[in-house]
Length: 128
Image (cartoon, rainbow, N blue to C red; front, side, top):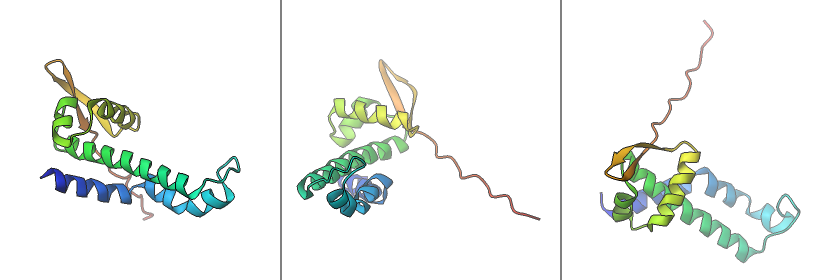
């Protein structure tokens, strides 16, 4: 898959994701009523927050897609995506925290990371 195709797929995952959808759904409340502290956010500030969140999610989804193809080192992720290595490390830390990525081995001196296997939803027990 080309980098362009990967970015398009990652963008689709981003707009379907919970974080960006939540922010978009809260625009009216955040810009008029305000946040939990009652502080209203200006329109330009709200736009900045949404763009920043979408950018972060896009990069994380791009990295996840790469790791779904098999274990990757930070260097390999950088070569495949063009994302700066320090940013990749920050994303991996966050993705590990959410149990979306796990370290699966070493390649020389570099840890390899892979997307965590998706857990199947619990089966519903029907009444017989």
